[in-house]
Amino acid sequence: MKLLFVHDHKFRYIEGKFYSTGGLSDNVLKRYTDVFGDVTVIARVIKEKRKKNQYSEISNKNVVIKNGIKLGYTGFINEIKKADYIISRMPSFLGLKAIILARKLNKPCLIELVACPWDSLWNHSLIGKLVAPFMTMATKIITKNASHVLYVTNEFLQRRYPTNGKSINCSDVVLTEFDNNVLKNRLQKISKTNSKLIIGTIAAVDVRYKGQQYIIKALGKLKKQGITNFEYQLVGGGDPTYLKSVAKKFNVIEQVKFLGPKPHEKIFEWLDTIDIYVQPSRAEGLPRSLIEAMSRGLPAFGANTGEIPELLESKYIFTNSRNNIDEICKILLSFNKEIMKIQAERNFHEAKKYNKTSTEKKRLAFFKQFMGDHF
Image (cartoon, rainbow, N blue to C red):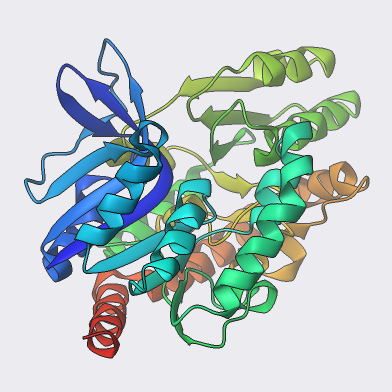
């Protein structure tokens, strides 16, 4: 069998090899090769001269990667014709193209819906605001008429983009380690915590809808009140110029640390060094980074976006409004040792819902159902 997987993911091509930043790593692609055999991935490909530390090589011999931007209409059609099944990860422009062509050629197509196109595009840029209505409507139509849809959220994306076909909710997050010693060590760390608290976020630092600027502004407001015991560490790639300008404007540049990108295997080590995790973005499906932080027993808070309110208690959610800076300050000031311990235990056990065994079994069963329905 042959699967065609299509998404706007950006692979790096360096000295004859393909690399991923993590979203479609070898481990992720293995879930498709294990079921479908040979997998051709149509995505975006960027040529670079030097490998960076956060890149992971795609070494799966059953995976072939092709540049969807240079493939052309005829090449795209030929890849769809050669495939037995198509999986389109949405939202993506290449994914949308694949679905339209697959339906014309009567090829079975499964949709993986991993984020809300309206939130992602509207909060991205001026061009994004122009494209958002079209992409949102297109996603609503194709999802409604799809035969099979895999949602990464429990409720959020299902409400916005319902389907008449078969569907499941299956997180894209895969957590393999749930050692009770992780929680024990976290509780001990909280007990030893002094007045300084380190807040952390994992996200690109050059995408404004990720929302790190709101946390920085909140630190600035707290500093005016004489409260300077918070440090904000940002992990993620991209140009931090804008966020640095915000930190300088609000006079907290010494409290904001830009750590750059980290390979995924190093993320958990870093999470164990911080005290509070925050997911401040204005566009999310099911935030993997937040769940990974919760699995390390981290107290956490976040914006009223996507599935974040389903993961955290309501008092640790701030609104996407003009009042959010005040709300962030209030939440930060509420974290004392007792509260942090309660949240550490609560979040650790909540994250257990996303263990690898249950999610992989659920996804595998749905893939097999999709194949059986189109045999």
